[in-house]
Image (tube, rainbow, N blue to C red; front, top):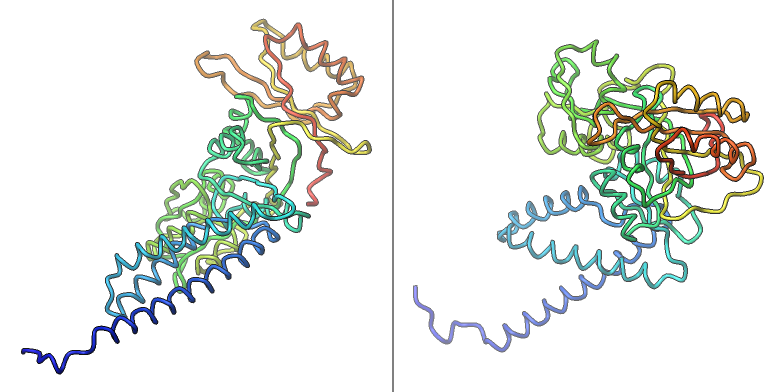
Length: 383
């Protein structure tokens, strides 16, 4: 088919139409960026992470579908939208930097919807000046970001009433460069999550963080046809169930994760009936002031002299000084077979006379001793 010149549209008019559409695109981008500003303000006030990878993945998935429906190349449209999302994040970061009060930057291990994220929101939501939460894949990444100044505080899980101590956190604290300034006890309510319409009987694999798997061991023994596989985070496990779209795969995660990723609760309360609580420690680069009337706890790390009976002498010294030992934990020392570090939680402030005297008594019994922090003590499991 051939075109006659008389049939061709006027190129000047076509260019005018393109410029008009370009203006419409720019206006739409301006409105999108204005909404990004509102989202930034909401996230700071609501203690939500600035960057949300699962949400970004959902947006890109929708964009690809819409592009295909409109006869556009979905890969090129995705590339454009990745740039737009980076523009939105940069704009949100710029807005936060212009705020009169700089938001507190807090990191935690996991993604939005994880138990660490829920505990962080519990701790910081509504804080005057706002909070900027950042989820990272591991506790090590969180503490490294804290040490280099990219975060003001870190919130790390350290023990659970069902599964015991989180050894990684103890080992990270032993490396130094951070001090405990607070603690938080948060109730954990595990759910078995699956695709909408799936049934417990057809589930063959369950994904979750190793600690969550351990906490739900009694439930998993009742469903021997299900194999548990570790994932770095409970909420990430829920996201994988959504992405795999396989009714035989489920996750152990929170109700919040179910709502976030469009999953269905297959079984509720799969943790022990007596309740399941996780203790988190709040970590900073520097010690923080403590109110004068606060009941305190002091955390300590010691390496004992390699002599028989030394640990018994330590416990006796604390008892004689009237210092209550709230927790004692041992961890192997890397590169030194059969040698251990001991972590002690003592009731009282490190500057109180009984504790000062007790620490002096411990000096000759240890080859090294480090104060990990003194901080207000959580009274009971009511938070």
